Image (cartoon, rainbow, N blue to C red; front, side):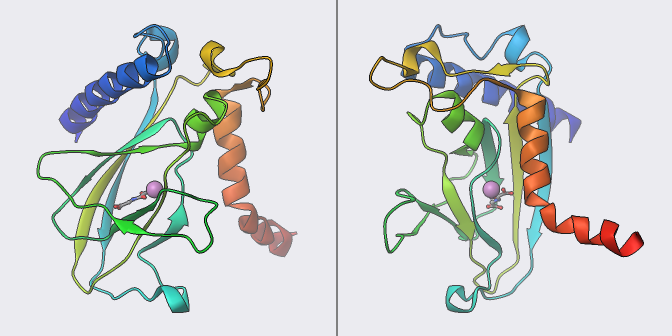
Length: 193
Ligand code: OGA
Ligand code: NI
């Protein structure tokens, strides 16, 4: 797992260089010690049991969401399951399967990158449907250093399109997102009181 962690981070850095070029930034804008030198990078080992999903009944392997962070590298087995929705605002939403390619990562963009790029890049809305087979995947979440400042990128703002969000520290942003996600846990505190 340590080797995977190490090597996946190198892939994450390479992808960050492509993202920087796509945004007209210096190639090493993200891939430098202040940003990805001490990243909050976490691995999630996932096993979806052999259940069938039923969206009509709200039964999913993983419900629709976008990941919090910068980018996610997803390694999966060859069991279909992951779907993405390219237009979050479409009604109804259109879900497309992502075909796994052996030896390749699926790259999902996270909400932090959406914020950083002033919504130039949209985070990937995705979900997982079970088709009755066991499915295994490894999600590698790449977030910058704790103290990295997520501030509207210089190439993503103009007079007509000013920054939509104030600057925020990576750690503040992430803890806020975790807190929002687990807001329901506060009921336990109330029971204890
Ligand atoms: C996730 C996720 C997808 C998958 O862990 O955030 O979206 O294919 N995983 O397991
Ligand atoms: Ni996800």
